[in-house]
Image (cartoon, rainbow, N blue to C red; front, side, top):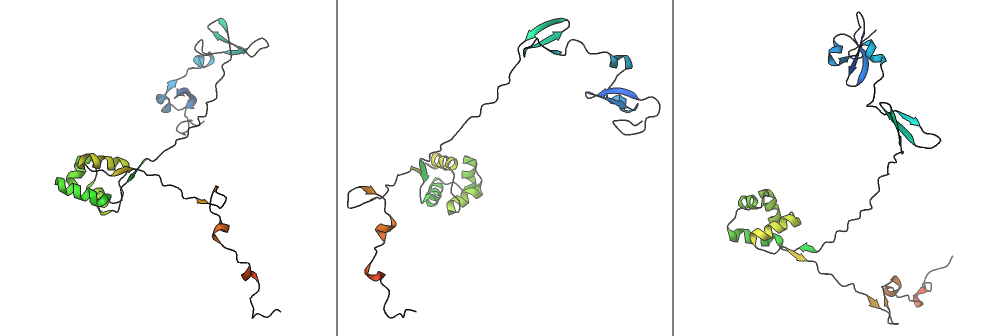
Length: 199
């Protein structure tokens, strides 16, 4: 017979042990890792802390037997987790101005900060600030807000809604432009061109 933990051949009597909740047949060395189960303990059933569920009289109810008294118990139903329909609408209300790079550079130089000094004050790397000033990178809203507060400049402005141009037809109704409105069909040129021979 072999040990169920280490796999070595068991010399002598095998030992039953409870190792991490599993009852295993092990050698003497591996029995040290758990609690040894003696033959008289293994035959006795555990008492009271476990629930013994018995069917009720014709209904779906169950009974709990603990130490001798039987109490009727209603079956528990697990409610299925509700699926939440979360939709997030993000409305962008501010945009970065067009000449942000030059404005940041001028304000930084006016206040006498180097890239490193400005980076330390707003907790940002100097290389990121250099990239922003060169126009290679746009600052996100959080960084733009930090720069606005420290340099006392305005980088984010409200978005202006553009009006949608609509053309009005001869009837006076608001309609969208169609392909037929753009292309003029010339029925005179629809005839076959002269000079070609028909085959």
